Image (tube, rainbow, N blue to C red; front, side, top):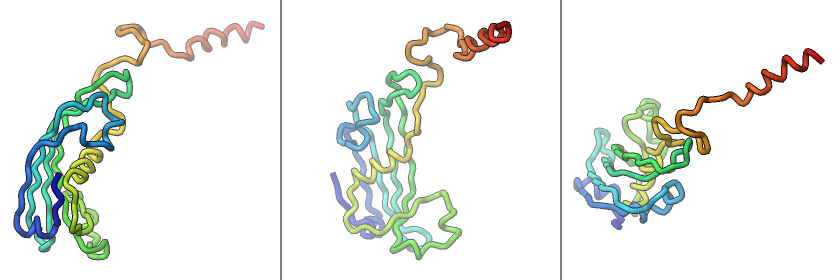
Amino acid sequence: MDVIDSQVFAREGGSLQGELPVAALTRLLDLLTASDGSLTYRIQGRMGPCKRPQLLVEVDGVLSLCCQRCLEAIDYPIEVRSLLEFVDSDGDLTQEELEDDSRDFLPDQKELDVAVLIEDEILLALPLAPRHDHCALPGVAPGSANVSPFSVLAGLQGKAEQV
């Protein structure tokens, strides 16, 4: 995978695009139910309004995550669109810039690993607890009535008063 200098890449308006195998995203593997397939990416460099280097990162594809409700596989579409702006240090940012959610700020990097950058952006885009829109808990038959575990206690309450 490519390693770029963020300053030079942005100043020259560099562009990278291609496919990244899901299996190469090692920090993601524990979250996946399958590691086959690949994601497409595009990275475009440019200079921002404050003459700071920027990268527009786009990643598209589908990841197979584990539904946190039924524990079955869920195909989760990935559509990352991130604008990253590189700065010398945190002190260079104004309060207004810090509050701006349209872009993220990173320290300048002479050796920026593109695969690591893409994986970072994917990890930030994933939900904390992926779930199907409609599914049942493991061991619960679909369509079965939801019985409260406290319903047994309600029945015991009347008996306790009789004793």
